[in-house]
Length: 151
Image (cartoon, rainbow, N blue to C red):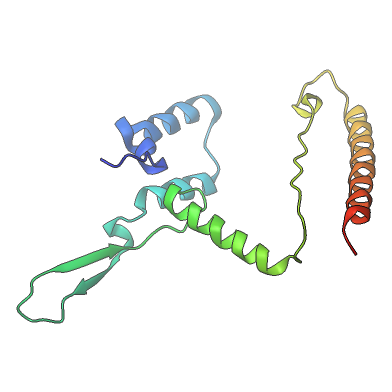
């Protein structure tokens, strides 16, 4: 067994995904169709049902052959998603200008967690205020970095 534990292995370990789906559907109803499709893709990844390419030695006396199974190409799959992410990063590097980049992550406050005690108008007001403050912060940071860059 591989030292890496893949999503596919987690799904298939003791029928975990089937048990999850059964329990979920009892409590909440059917999952979205795209979730079923993603699960099916992951479970069929590198499986004979997807097909394969067969490579054989050109020497007629050699009996060695190798089958390379097709992948699911799902971004949710442990093996396919990593490749898709790397491809996306390389594409972004080609598109974006050469510059010093900083990564900023904005998280939403708990107020947007669907708490019933907050009225819709209050949530909209907070979102507008949040957008204005974030815009001011990003603009300030951009100008500060632009002034610091050598000319």
